[in-house]
Amino acid sequence: MAQSKIIVGLEMGTTKTCMVVGEIHPDSTAAIIGVGEVPSAGIRKGEIADMSMARQCLFDAWQSAQDHADVEIMSVILSVTGEHIYGENGQGSYRLPDDEDIIEYEHTDLAREKAEKIEIAADRFVINREMGNFSIDNRETSRHPIGLTGRTLDVKCHVMHGILTRIQNYLMCARQVPLEVEDIVFAPLATAQVVLTRQQKEAGALLIDIGGGTSDFICYSNGDIVASGCIAEGGNSINKAIIEQSGKPMTNKAAEVLKCTEGNAFGDVKDTSMAYYRSELGNEVSIQRGLLNRIIRDCLADILLDVRDNIPVSVLEQSGMTVYLSGGTSLMRGLDNLAQFIFKVPVRQPLPPGTGDEYSYLSDPRFCTAIGLIRFAQMYDETAMRSTKRGWWHRLLKFLRGRR
Image (cartoon, helix red, strand yellow):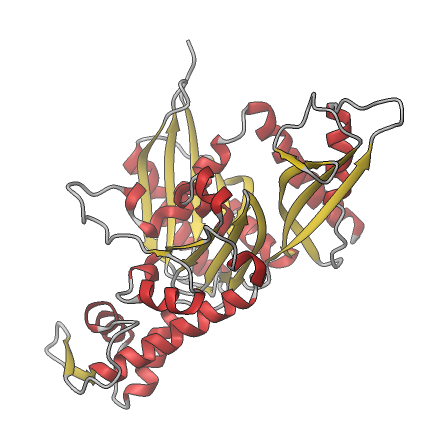
């Protein structure tokens, strides 16, 4: 009788270290059976700055996830982020021999090989390669062209790569716990597995995941990835600006509470009424709502404009394009209106957790990346997973040997 399979997604973010345990049943359905979450320390803007602190947070999340799921966790699928990671587009073309006109597997493999050959700097490492649709004789597009007739086969490939040493820090941190990393995934690619459907990707979708320290993005056009990357700003940047511009002594917690409970990213910047925060010790701080709204608006606008500058104009202008927001900061009031003003397309903002009848991790934008890692792994059957695992390990080992 077929056995269920356990897959664990690990996200080590700036504000939280999160481990989600998924159980994949023989009928391919999945269930979240455990979550371990602790506040992060030693991680800045998505990158490890203090190994010992980051390792302790990972250890605590690991123990919590094991207790919650009542399983032993030995390996994880890891998401990585940071402004050093970005995506590039490649294209491969293969012309069939003159005596052949039916597309076979070997023809698609040759086209893929050419599409994947993007020159990157010696200190960078390919994290993910995502193939797009095939084009046959510059006309028909197909995800599976095997058996169709044609003379020329073209395919696009989106390659996501980052600085190897920064990725290695995460691998070393996991192994010191100790945990084995089965695969690594650029964070927005994982998030998209939860937030976006296949139909939305084909219609045109820009996903922006705004966390505490970074804002990741990935853009789809006709089902293909056309852009991806990371902006090294997030919700923490807003808190810092509130503290700096308030002109009063204020803790980060006070700034966070004022931002989330009183602020509005598209609110009135001339509102002179006061917003107050009182700590557990009775200390009170205040700020004009208009100033609070302006600070939030300016910080988030900078992030959204940076994302917009990384997306081809023609893609944003295509019919059907929609912006989807995710991440903890995506719950900010007025952010949907601000994003719509900047991108001039429809915007979908997630509902606050617990808005429905029952809380679910699947509907919580803070857990989309970790859960997306499970779905990302689930997309591949056992053979494909082993092939993927060998692929990135082989590239890593080859790189390290070449430096000796």
